[in-house]
Length: 153
Image 1 (cartoon, rainbow, N blue to C red):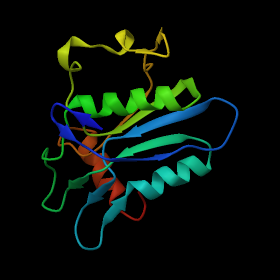
Image 2: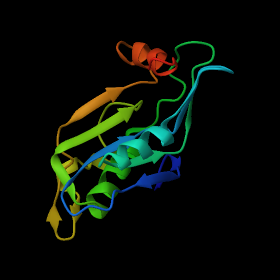
Image 3: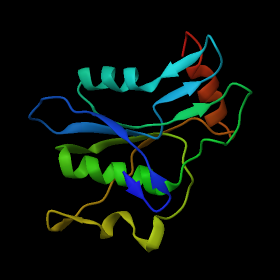
């Protein structure tokens, strides 16, 4: 994905199914918590795809070794671009979208909102859905990140 704030690669997992799929967009592909407690979100996304959910995982690492920090928070447009890619390439179940990770809150650059982007001639919007927050210092994001770096998590 190429945006004004930079370029980010991504990995996509799409189950081979005919029915509408739940979709999830991950802001990062890994969390590094130290030498013995790292989380590979690509493996998690692959497992979700095997269970029937389409996933797109943006390349990038959240560095959590020295404790909670906001160093890995991404500009909002990367998540937006990934959501729109899912709309264009996946038969999405609009009742089961999800976002996961850390990102800056706020509007999309240039005032573009979800409903004004047209794909295939019709305006489509990433619907409100589940948001799993991690990789940021606020609650519950910090607690979620700490849990994800444990065997239990």
